[in-house]
Every structure is written in structure tokens, then in C-alpha cells.
Image 1 (cartoon, rainbow, N blue to C red):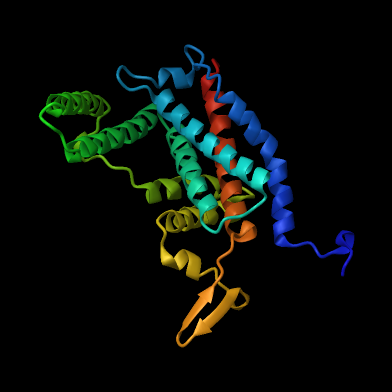
Image 2 (tube, rainbow, N blue to C red):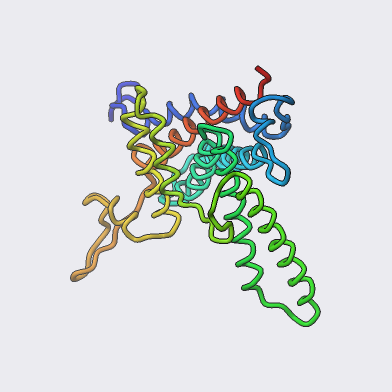
Length: 276
């Protein structure tokens, strides 16, 4: 048996050390979201706010959700010391999506861009709520409450449409949707001219697709990760394989990607929150 000190290092070992390096910053963010602070009056981010459209709140909520899921991932990995084949990727997908959305709004080139992006996220959310309510069954006793909730959301759509018109958009907010793939690609382009561009520019869209496959329970996510040594037995044309969690090729890169997106998002957020 090889002495542990002289055992060959594995990609798993390397990623364990990398995550340990990132963890303190993630913990710091976890504490930060417990005590939010409003942007300084007169700052760029404060001035992005419109009546009935709080751009900063759209961003901050996304940052909170992302940090929460990232902390959960690190907590579970630390406490139980196990990797699950698909579960971490599912949690990290939410963290990835919300960090990307926050950075997407923050990185709008102009105030109008940032407002329109926050508007799209808000309109999409309202549209989803309306679909849920309309699809929900109601009894004679709850029908009036259902109609009241629906009317409030329809009124909110009218408010958002007025905002869209004010910002020069001709789009109907009732048909506004988020195309997350396009948003991920847009955010990924921010690293094209950096040293990390080779990894993040190409890696973010791949991680988005991978996390989506895991979260939707798609067969190809597992099948593509099975190697000959994972086969446990076969009978006729069928085979049984053991699917394992992969820190080096799945969880580690996904976690690191979220970290770097959040790092950039918080940097922009902090800069935009200060009165220059």
C-alpha cells in the first residue's frame, strides 16, 4: 500500500483544495446578505430605480438566492463528505442562473439597458404568476380570492407596460420572456478579453447546459459519464452501471463558475452603490 503522503494527487484532490480556498469568500457573502444595505443616495445604482421598478431589488434578490445555494452546496459537501451524481448540479444550477441574471442586469451599458433588463425579469416573473393562478383550481369559496389575485397581477402588467413605453420599448410586457441561454452567452462574453476568457467564456454556456440536463433528469447526463470501470454487471443486451458524483468534471467547475460570476457581480454592485 502506498503511503498517503506519497500517493499520486488526483483531480478530486485538486478541486477539494480549490473549493476550500473559495469557501471563505462565499461565507463572507453569506453573512453579507443577512444585513442588506441600500445603495448610497445619488449613486448610479440608486438612480437606476424608477417608480414601480426597483432595479436594485431585482439584482439583490438574485444575488441572495445565488449565495444561499452556493453556501448550501459547500455546507453539504463539508458536512457529509459525499458527492451525489446529480443533486449538487441541480442546486448549483439555481445559483448559476441567479448569479448570471444579477450580473446581466448590472452590466447593462446604459441606465436604459439596466432598467429594461430588470423590467424583463420582473415581467417574466409576473407572467409566470398569472399562469399559475389561472391554472389553479378554485372552489366557490376561493373563486373571489383567485380573481382578486389575478386582477392585481394584471394591474401590475399595466404598470410595467407604462414603464416599457417610457423606456422606449415597443414590446408587449405580456409576452416578455427570459431566454436564459442568450443571457448566459451575453454574460460569458464579458470574459472574452481576459486571461480567464478561455475558460469562462466557453465554460459558462457549457455549465448552463450541463446543469440543465442534471436538473431535468435527462438520461444523457448520466449515460455520458459512465466509463467501463463503472459497469457492475450485464445480462443479455442490458447492463447496470454505477453513476458517481464527479468533482473534477462537474461539481467543481460549476461551483467555480458561480463563484467568479458572483465575484464580478458584487464588484460592479459595490462600485455602482457608491456616490462618486
